[in-house]
Length: 351
Image (cartoon, rainbow, N blue to C red; front, side):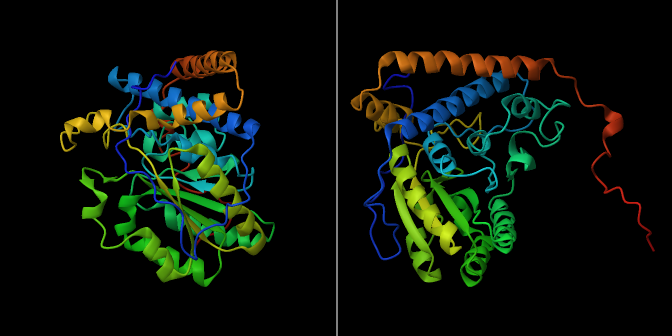
Protein backbone atom coordinates (compact mmCIF):
# COMPACT_ATOMS: atom_id res chain seq x y z
CA UNK A 1 0.00 0.00 0.00
CA UNK A 2 1.26 3.48 -0.84
CA UNK A 3 2.08 5.86 1.98
CA UNK A 4 2.52 9.60 1.94
CA UNK A 5 6.30 9.17 1.76
CA UNK A 6 6.37 6.73 -1.15
CA UNK A 7 6.62 9.28 -3.94
CA UNK A 8 8.08 12.76 -3.79
CA UNK A 9 7.05 15.61 -6.09
CA UNK A 10 9.82 18.01 -7.02
CA UNK A 11 7.82 20.09 -9.51
CA UNK A 12 6.01 23.36 -9.14
CA UNK A 13 2.19 23.25 -9.10
CA UNK A 14 0.56 24.00 -12.43
CA UNK A 15 -0.83 27.44 -13.04
CA UNK A 16 -4.55 27.66 -13.61
CA UNK A 17 -5.60 27.46 -17.22
CA UNK A 18 -5.97 30.82 -18.87
CA UNK A 19 -5.78 32.49 -22.24
CA UNK A 20 -7.63 32.25 -25.51
CA UNK A 21 -5.81 29.09 -26.53
CA UNK A 22 -6.96 27.10 -23.49
CA UNK A 23 -9.30 24.13 -23.79
CA UNK A 24 -12.79 24.63 -22.37
CA UNK A 25 -13.18 22.03 -19.63
CA UNK A 26 -15.81 23.92 -17.63
CA UNK A 27 -18.49 21.35 -18.38
CA UNK A 28 -16.24 18.32 -18.22
CA UNK A 29 -17.01 15.83 -15.44
CA UNK A 30 -14.83 12.77 -14.93
CA UNK A 31 -17.06 10.04 -13.50
CA UNK A 32 -15.90 7.80 -10.70
CA UNK A 33 -15.81 4.63 -12.80
CA UNK A 34 -13.59 6.31 -15.38
CA UNK A 35 -11.28 7.57 -12.66
CA UNK A 36 -11.12 4.04 -11.24
CA UNK A 37 -9.97 2.78 -14.63
CA UNK A 38 -7.30 5.46 -14.77
CA UNK A 39 -6.12 4.59 -11.27
CA UNK A 40 -5.95 0.93 -12.25
CA UNK A 41 -3.66 1.81 -15.16
CA UNK A 42 -1.54 4.13 -13.03
CA UNK A 43 -0.99 1.37 -10.50
CA UNK A 44 -0.07 -1.11 -13.23
CA UNK A 45 2.51 1.31 -14.63
CA UNK A 46 3.94 2.02 -11.17
CA UNK A 47 4.31 -1.62 -10.24
CA UNK A 48 5.74 -2.53 -13.65
CA UNK A 49 8.43 0.13 -13.34
CA UNK A 50 9.24 -0.83 -9.78
CA UNK A 51 9.72 -4.36 -11.12
CA UNK A 52 12.03 -3.07 -13.85
CA UNK A 53 14.02 -1.12 -11.28
CA UNK A 54 14.67 -4.32 -9.31
CA UNK A 55 15.61 -6.20 -12.48
CA UNK A 56 18.02 -3.42 -13.41
CA UNK A 57 19.70 -3.56 -10.01
CA UNK A 58 20.04 -7.33 -10.45
CA UNK A 59 21.87 -6.77 -13.74
CA UNK A 60 19.13 -8.28 -15.90
CA UNK A 61 18.27 -5.16 -17.92
CA UNK A 62 20.88 -4.22 -20.53
CA UNK A 63 21.64 -0.59 -21.25
CA UNK A 64 20.12 2.43 -19.54
CA UNK A 65 16.80 2.59 -17.73
CA UNK A 66 14.71 5.77 -17.52
CA UNK A 67 11.72 5.50 -15.19
CA UNK A 68 8.56 7.60 -15.25
CA UNK A 69 7.65 7.05 -11.59
CA UNK A 70 5.63 10.09 -10.52
CA UNK A 71 4.38 10.83 -14.04
CA UNK A 72 1.84 7.99 -14.37
CA UNK A 73 -1.25 10.20 -14.34
CA UNK A 74 -0.42 11.74 -17.71
CA UNK A 75 -0.10 8.52 -19.69
CA UNK A 76 -3.03 6.81 -17.97
CA UNK A 77 -5.44 9.74 -18.27
CA UNK A 78 -4.62 10.68 -21.86
CA UNK A 79 -4.72 7.07 -23.06
CA UNK A 80 -8.12 6.61 -21.42
CA UNK A 81 -9.43 8.96 -24.14
CA UNK A 82 -7.87 7.03 -27.04
CA UNK A 83 -9.21 4.34 -29.32
CA UNK A 84 -7.52 1.32 -30.86
CA UNK A 85 -6.73 3.12 -34.12
CA UNK A 86 -5.33 6.26 -32.55
CA UNK A 87 -1.53 6.27 -32.60
CA UNK A 88 1.04 7.11 -29.94
CA UNK A 89 4.76 7.88 -29.98
CA UNK A 90 6.97 8.34 -26.97
CA UNK A 91 10.44 9.22 -25.73
CA UNK A 92 13.23 7.61 -23.71
CA UNK A 93 10.97 7.64 -20.62
CA UNK A 94 8.23 5.73 -22.35
CA UNK A 95 7.25 2.68 -20.30
CA UNK A 96 4.07 4.30 -19.00
CA UNK A 97 2.94 5.47 -22.42
CA UNK A 98 3.51 1.99 -23.83
CA UNK A 99 1.62 0.17 -21.09
CA UNK A 100 -1.24 2.69 -21.13
CA UNK A 101 -1.75 2.15 -24.87
CA UNK A 102 -2.48 -1.50 -24.11
CA UNK A 103 0.71 -3.40 -24.84
CA UNK A 104 0.94 -7.03 -23.70
CA UNK A 105 2.97 -7.07 -20.49
CA UNK A 106 4.77 -10.33 -21.28
CA UNK A 107 6.11 -8.96 -24.55
CA UNK A 108 6.91 -5.65 -22.87
CA UNK A 109 9.04 -7.25 -20.16
CA UNK A 110 10.64 -9.64 -22.64
CA UNK A 111 11.65 -6.73 -24.86
CA UNK A 112 13.34 -4.82 -22.06
CA UNK A 113 15.09 -8.01 -20.94
CA UNK A 114 16.37 -8.51 -24.51
CA UNK A 115 14.48 -11.76 -25.09
CA UNK A 116 13.46 -13.26 -28.44
CA UNK A 117 9.77 -13.05 -27.51
CA UNK A 118 9.96 -9.30 -26.94
CA UNK A 119 7.72 -6.91 -28.84
CA UNK A 120 10.68 -6.07 -31.08
CA UNK A 121 12.37 -9.45 -30.68
CA UNK A 122 14.60 -8.04 -27.96
CA UNK A 123 16.29 -5.54 -30.26
CA UNK A 124 14.74 -2.30 -29.08
CA UNK A 125 15.01 -2.56 -25.34
CA UNK A 126 13.78 0.02 -22.87
CA UNK A 127 14.14 3.10 -25.07
CA UNK A 128 12.73 1.65 -28.29
CA UNK A 129 9.67 -0.38 -27.32
CA UNK A 130 7.06 -0.45 -30.07
CA UNK A 131 3.94 -2.38 -31.02
CA UNK A 132 2.46 -1.26 -34.32
CA UNK A 133 -0.50 -3.62 -33.94
CA UNK A 134 -1.97 -1.45 -31.19
CA UNK A 135 -0.83 1.89 -32.61
CA UNK A 136 2.25 2.27 -30.40
CA UNK A 137 4.69 3.67 -32.95
CA UNK A 138 7.61 3.47 -30.57
CA UNK A 139 9.63 5.05 -27.82
CA UNK A 140 12.69 6.97 -28.98
CA UNK A 141 16.12 7.42 -27.45
CA UNK A 142 16.77 10.63 -29.40
CA UNK A 143 15.18 13.63 -27.69
CA UNK A 144 12.23 14.90 -29.73
CA UNK A 145 12.45 12.12 -32.32
CA UNK A 146 8.92 10.89 -31.69
CA UNK A 147 7.41 14.23 -32.65
CA UNK A 148 8.01 14.11 -36.45
CA UNK A 149 6.97 10.44 -36.45
CA UNK A 150 3.68 11.35 -34.82
CA UNK A 151 3.16 14.36 -37.07
CA UNK A 152 3.51 12.07 -40.08
CA UNK A 153 1.08 9.63 -38.52
CA UNK A 154 -1.39 12.49 -38.00
CA UNK A 155 -1.16 13.33 -41.71
CA UNK A 156 -1.94 9.72 -42.62
CA UNK A 157 -4.88 9.64 -40.22
CA UNK A 158 -6.25 12.89 -41.61
CA UNK A 159 -6.08 11.54 -45.16
CA UNK A 160 -8.01 8.46 -44.02
CA UNK A 161 -10.70 10.80 -42.75
CA UNK A 162 -12.07 8.55 -40.01
CA UNK A 163 -11.61 10.87 -37.03
CA UNK A 164 -8.57 9.20 -35.48
CA UNK A 165 -5.79 11.21 -33.86
CA UNK A 166 -2.07 10.90 -33.12
CA UNK A 167 -0.53 11.61 -29.71
CA UNK A 168 3.11 12.25 -28.89
CA UNK A 169 4.58 12.44 -25.39
CA UNK A 170 7.77 14.41 -24.84
CA UNK A 171 9.59 16.20 -22.05
CA UNK A 172 10.19 19.90 -21.60
CA UNK A 173 13.80 19.44 -22.68
CA UNK A 174 12.64 18.52 -26.19
CA UNK A 175 11.31 22.05 -26.71
CA UNK A 176 14.85 23.19 -27.49
CA UNK A 177 15.00 20.83 -30.49
CA UNK A 178 14.46 22.45 -33.89
CA UNK A 179 12.38 19.57 -35.25
CA UNK A 180 9.75 20.27 -32.60
CA UNK A 181 9.14 23.74 -34.00
CA UNK A 182 9.09 22.44 -37.55
CA UNK A 183 6.34 20.03 -36.53
CA UNK A 184 4.36 22.69 -34.65
CA UNK A 185 4.46 24.74 -37.84
CA UNK A 186 3.46 22.00 -40.28
CA UNK A 187 0.77 20.65 -37.92
CA UNK A 188 -0.85 24.07 -37.77
CA UNK A 189 -0.34 24.79 -41.46
CA UNK A 190 -1.95 21.51 -42.54
CA UNK A 191 -4.45 21.25 -39.66
CA UNK A 192 -3.19 17.85 -38.53
CA UNK A 193 -4.93 15.95 -35.70
CA UNK A 194 -1.87 15.62 -33.48
CA UNK A 195 -1.91 16.14 -29.72
CA UNK A 196 1.46 17.30 -28.42
CA UNK A 197 1.64 16.23 -24.76
CA UNK A 198 4.52 17.88 -22.90
CA UNK A 199 5.36 16.20 -19.61
CA UNK A 200 7.04 19.15 -17.94
CA UNK A 201 8.80 17.70 -14.91
CA UNK A 202 10.99 20.75 -14.43
CA UNK A 203 14.24 19.04 -15.41
CA UNK A 204 16.09 18.66 -18.67
CA UNK A 205 18.43 15.84 -17.76
CA UNK A 206 20.39 17.46 -14.90
CA UNK A 207 19.42 21.11 -15.42
CA UNK A 208 16.30 23.06 -14.45
CA UNK A 209 14.05 23.76 -17.41
CA UNK A 210 14.17 27.52 -16.93
CA UNK A 211 17.87 27.41 -17.78
CA UNK A 212 17.16 25.68 -21.08
CA UNK A 213 14.32 27.64 -22.67
CA UNK A 214 14.03 31.32 -23.57
CA UNK A 215 10.23 31.29 -23.36
CA UNK A 216 7.33 29.15 -22.19
CA UNK A 217 5.40 26.51 -24.09
CA UNK A 218 2.29 28.64 -23.64
CA UNK A 219 3.98 31.46 -25.54
CA UNK A 220 5.17 29.03 -28.22
CA UNK A 221 1.62 27.79 -28.69
CA UNK A 222 0.37 31.35 -29.02
CA UNK A 223 3.04 32.11 -31.62
CA UNK A 224 2.00 29.11 -33.74
CA UNK A 225 -1.71 29.66 -33.14
CA UNK A 226 -2.16 26.17 -31.71
CA UNK A 227 -4.78 25.39 -29.06
CA UNK A 228 -3.08 25.08 -25.66
CA UNK A 229 -3.96 23.95 -22.17
CA UNK A 230 -1.95 23.53 -18.99
CA UNK A 231 -2.91 21.09 -16.26
CA UNK A 232 -1.66 19.61 -13.02
CA UNK A 233 -0.03 16.49 -14.39
CA UNK A 234 -0.17 14.83 -10.97
CA UNK A 235 -3.98 15.09 -10.91
CA UNK A 236 -5.37 12.39 -13.20
CA UNK A 237 -8.84 13.90 -13.11
CA UNK A 238 -7.51 17.26 -14.31
CA UNK A 239 -5.52 15.61 -17.11
CA UNK A 240 -8.48 13.47 -18.20
CA UNK A 241 -10.90 16.42 -18.28
CA UNK A 242 -8.59 18.50 -20.45
CA UNK A 243 -7.58 15.63 -22.73
CA UNK A 244 -11.17 14.53 -23.27
CA UNK A 245 -12.36 18.03 -24.17
CA UNK A 246 -9.37 18.66 -26.43
CA UNK A 247 -9.49 15.31 -28.22
CA UNK A 248 -13.23 15.63 -28.84
CA UNK A 249 -12.61 18.85 -30.78
CA UNK A 250 -9.63 17.35 -32.61
CA UNK A 251 -11.69 14.41 -33.86
CA UNK A 252 -14.35 16.65 -35.35
CA UNK A 253 -12.16 19.46 -36.64
CA UNK A 254 -8.83 17.69 -37.37
CA UNK A 255 -6.54 20.27 -35.84
CA UNK A 256 -3.47 20.17 -33.57
CA UNK A 257 -3.40 20.92 -29.86
CA UNK A 258 -0.80 21.20 -27.11
CA UNK A 259 -1.33 19.88 -23.59
CA UNK A 260 1.30 20.81 -21.02
CA UNK A 261 1.27 18.65 -17.90
CA UNK A 262 3.24 19.90 -14.89
CA UNK A 263 4.42 16.67 -13.36
CA UNK A 264 7.15 14.95 -11.38
CA UNK A 265 10.32 13.08 -12.21
CA UNK A 266 10.84 11.30 -8.93
CA UNK A 267 13.78 9.18 -10.04
CA UNK A 268 16.93 10.57 -11.61
CA UNK A 269 17.42 11.17 -15.30
CA UNK A 270 18.43 7.50 -15.46
CA UNK A 271 18.77 4.75 -12.89
CA UNK A 272 22.10 5.31 -11.17
CA UNK A 273 21.80 9.10 -11.31
CA UNK A 274 22.66 10.29 -7.77
CA UNK A 275 20.61 13.49 -8.24
CA UNK A 276 23.15 15.52 -6.29
CA UNK A 277 22.04 18.56 -8.30
CA UNK A 278 18.78 18.65 -6.31
CA UNK A 279 18.25 20.37 -2.97
CA UNK A 280 18.24 18.01 -0.01
CA UNK A 281 14.93 19.32 1.31
CA UNK A 282 13.04 18.68 -1.93
CA UNK A 283 12.32 15.09 -0.97
CA UNK A 284 9.90 16.19 1.76
CA UNK A 285 8.50 19.22 -0.04
CA UNK A 286 5.58 17.76 -1.97
CA UNK A 287 5.30 14.09 -1.01
CA UNK A 288 1.52 14.30 -0.75
CA UNK A 289 1.24 14.94 -4.49
CA UNK A 290 2.07 11.41 -5.56
CA UNK A 291 -0.43 11.00 -8.44
CA UNK A 292 -1.57 7.64 -7.11
CA UNK A 293 -2.25 9.11 -3.68
CA UNK A 294 -4.03 12.13 -5.17
CA UNK A 295 -6.36 9.89 -7.17
CA UNK A 296 -6.83 7.47 -4.29
CA UNK A 297 -8.02 10.30 -2.06
CA UNK A 298 -10.44 11.49 -4.73
CA UNK A 299 -11.89 8.01 -5.18
CA UNK A 300 -12.25 7.41 -1.45
CA UNK A 301 -14.04 10.74 -1.07
CA UNK A 302 -16.52 9.48 -3.68
CA UNK A 303 -17.26 6.29 -1.78
CA UNK A 304 -14.80 3.78 -3.23
CA UNK A 305 -14.10 1.29 -0.44
CA UNK A 306 -10.70 0.22 0.87
CA UNK A 307 -11.26 -3.38 -0.20
CA UNK A 308 -11.47 -2.25 -3.84
CA UNK A 309 -7.93 -0.90 -3.58
CA UNK A 310 -6.78 -4.04 -1.79
CA UNK A 311 -8.20 -6.34 -4.47
CA UNK A 312 -6.75 -4.18 -7.21
CA UNK A 313 -3.29 -4.31 -5.63
CA UNK A 314 -3.50 -8.10 -5.49
CA UNK A 315 -4.68 -8.56 -9.08
CA UNK A 316 -2.09 -6.08 -10.37
CA UNK A 317 0.72 -7.90 -8.60
CA UNK A 318 -0.49 -11.24 -9.96
CA UNK A 319 -0.70 -9.84 -13.50
CA UNK A 320 2.86 -8.55 -13.34
CA UNK A 321 4.20 -11.73 -11.74
CA UNK A 322 2.66 -13.89 -14.48
CA UNK A 323 3.98 -11.72 -17.31
CA UNK A 324 7.44 -11.43 -15.78
CA UNK A 325 7.77 -15.17 -15.18
CA UNK A 326 7.02 -15.85 -18.84
CA UNK A 327 9.47 -13.17 -19.97
CA UNK A 328 12.26 -14.48 -17.75
CA UNK A 329 11.72 -18.00 -19.08
CA UNK A 330 11.75 -16.85 -22.71
CA UNK A 331 14.72 -17.77 -24.95
CA UNK A 332 17.54 -15.43 -25.83
CA UNK A 333 17.66 -14.20 -29.45
CA UNK A 334 19.45 -16.46 -31.93
CA UNK A 335 22.58 -14.71 -33.30
CA UNK A 336 21.77 -16.20 -36.70
CA UNK A 337 18.70 -13.95 -36.87
CA UNK A 338 20.68 -10.74 -36.57
CA UNK A 339 19.88 -9.62 -40.14
CA UNK A 340 16.22 -10.58 -39.99
CA UNK A 341 13.88 -7.60 -40.51
CA UNK A 342 16.76 -5.38 -41.63
CA UNK A 343 15.86 -5.57 -45.31
CA UNK A 344 12.46 -5.83 -46.98
CA UNK A 345 12.05 -9.09 -48.85
CA UNK A 346 10.68 -8.34 -52.30
CA UNK A 347 10.01 -10.42 -55.34
CA UNK A 348 10.33 -7.42 -57.64
CA UNK A 349 13.17 -6.70 -60.01
CA UNK A 350 16.02 -4.38 -59.11
CA UNK A 351 18.38 -2.44 -61.31
